Image (cartoon, rainbow, N blue to C red; front, side, top):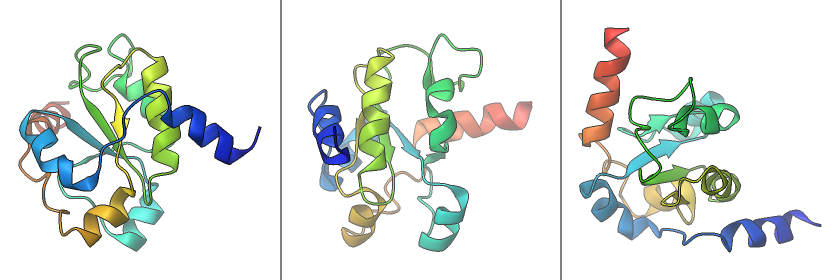
Length: 140
């Protein structure tokens, strides 16, 4: 097994999303998750409106049956779109969410860098899920 083969296998389990399709996904209620570590977000820039969930806790926060789930992890039909810097780590993460039964989970081809190049960094701002999750966090 090589990492290239592992990526190929992971990506064969779902359909990846191109950057230009993200606005429509957000409009229909998809939840965008930025899994880059804080240091990387500081260095590269943030993805305004996306939920920042670092890779090491992603499954715990998205599992609708888990005790550590986010308020937006309501069921297995949630559409999760995982974003990393360039679309590699996110592929493995999306495949892992698929294994949890989150059948609508996917990742963004080219990641944050593709969104930045396409001028789409602001597409998630004001999304319903972001507002709802922030309200939940503030109430605790």
